[in-house]
Length: 230
Image 1: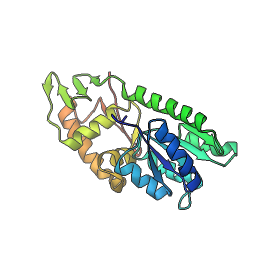
Image 2: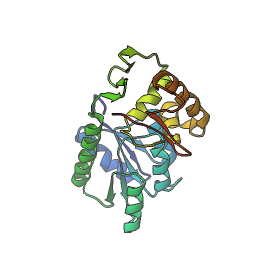
Image 3: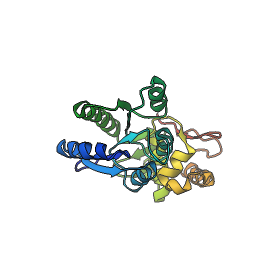
Image 4: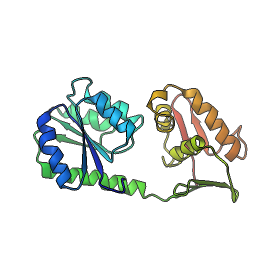
């Protein structure tokens, strides 16, 4: 999370929401950032990632669930849904798409702030996971941005390191092509899968005992890659 006030992006086209929620967030110690369309919200997330997002489903330029899907490709912070839609199916769909919570309008500010605190604590716990990851002879120090193999430092380009770190931080889960591309090369490159093939190949040459039969940098055909640690 931010070393200063946590930044909360509020994506909602209702001016009244911003008028009362912005000051409430500021009074609670947060920095409130305003966006009134899905396009503006996604751009704000890509330009400077907030600590959390409050996302309305009824946006004028795009359904909020579609915005949520697009955000998942490059933003890994908590997204809480704000919506006047009361159907249970809407809540289930939003949560299945990656939202961490769902708050119905109208809502009490105190309850929303409490839910926001929970989401931020959960994110902090995830970020506080062990900073050194071991995989056979490989050691990845996420704090010092240092990679070792067999006790010797491995020279990686900044993009090679960012790709490796993104995979290692996933804890053995598959990371989809678009998520990797957006995180390492930016949202404009989410279709450039060839970048991944080339850079994963570089990493295997530098880290795997036998690049032809990798033990740690595993391809999930047609989906993405995962990193297998100890």
